[in-house]
Image (tube, rainbow, N blue to C red):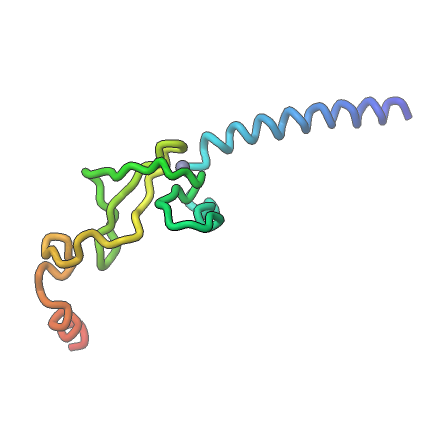
Length: 115
Ligand SMILES: [Zn+2]
């Protein structure tokens, strides 16, 4: 019976240090997790926040744009966890340089696709 208690005590000690170690590792690698939960949703405000750590220390990366099939978005880097993420507002949608339609009115592009 004493052997079992010793084993449990040893496992408890191991688990405590394991959790502390994994938390430190998680804090380092979470910025690269593509499926990390969006913690910015937990805040009841309209601040620009990091999706990974919730920090408001966000800096726009002027030389990097995020691109979808239709639009360009500004990119931001979190000053806390260093995550790079896409902004929510399209970058200057009226600028033909930033439009995937290359200056062609959207109506004509839609008509061309329906042919
Ligand atoms: Zn962050």
